Length: 115
Length: 114
Image 1 (tube, helix red, strand yellow):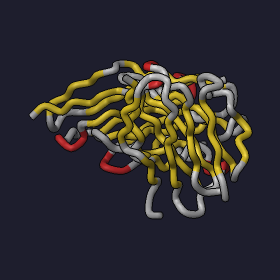
Image 2: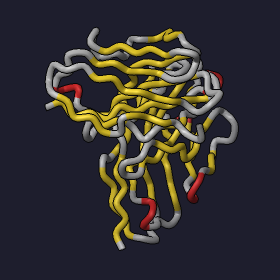
Image 3: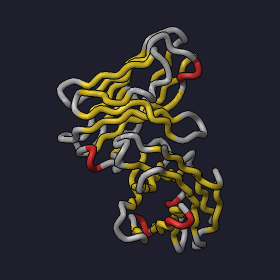
Image 4: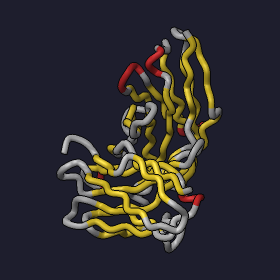
């Protein structure tokens, strides 16, 4: 696609429910990243993928968070048993390769509200 | 290890005035440095980047930043602010030993007064 696409753009859920957030990167971009942006704060790195593998999962806040990427394209971030502190904007970004380290193309984010 | 500090969470300038957004970094390896801009309800957009070439980097929308190794700084400037510059600005650092794991500052919200 022309840009990074994320869905849903907004999600309101009840505490304890599971949510899935989807990211469709720019076509041909091999690297994909997930960040979390809490109100009034900077971006918190969660995980990145090179192809379908995730070499670094150290940023995931807890074992309730998981992510996968299939076919070297679409990625899904899953949050199980959501808590109120999970409320944030979840941003996905992609880059052509890891050699383009840091030059990220961002989606518009998925705003998650946990009641 | 790497980190970014943006001095001033909010900066307000008058239209036509100089914009200066401050960023200091620390990195154990030669850094790549970036400024991103985020308009309301949008994703982040790259303004400019430093990757060890020229220390004065020019970006989009008239912004530029200067890499000063001795000061570990990468401040963002624009000579004359425009109303459309009102947004949140993020400084980020990345290094070749932790590819894909850029560290972002907390952001600076720029307000432009008429």
